[in-house]
Amino acid sequence: MRYSVIVPLYNAESTIKACIESVINQTYKDFELIIVDDGSTDKGGAFSDEYAKKFDNVKVFHVENGGAGKARNIGVSLSKGEYLLYLDSDDEWESSLLKNLEEYSSDVITFGYKIDYGQKIITKKIINESEELNVLNAIRIL
Image 1: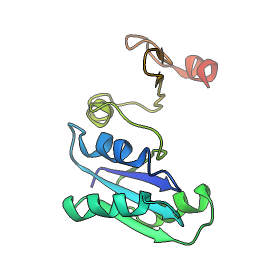
Image 2: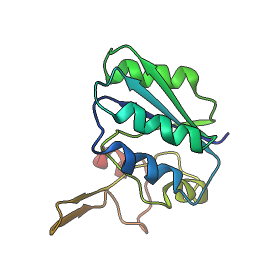
Image 3: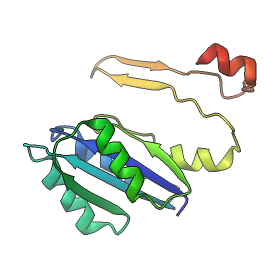
Image 4: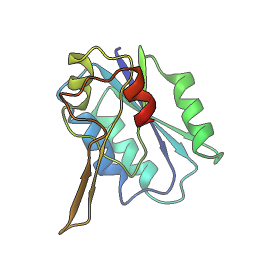
């Protein structure tokens, strides 16, 4: 297993489906998706269970509410991947994210973002794709 994607979940029924879909639709497939339901009182945990029934690489664990940090740590303890990635339950990935991680052998990885407000989309790249990330650039960016 190359990657373990850990998603802490708490009352995110309105966003968790899109989050999960963004991971299972990755073009690179050597990953597991670990969702730690942190005591949700909405349908987010049940929605996640449905994906776990359909996809062998999706695992859902239901735990007593302890906060996002504790949920992430539980996910880490259950992970089998060589590398760990975290994704919040209200965020989504582009379908090529894992493929791009595989193609570029990097010591440091930074992510930009895209916020979709419906009629307005705000995009921010951390660095240009052609810009080499060296130690000084990494310090400037971080």
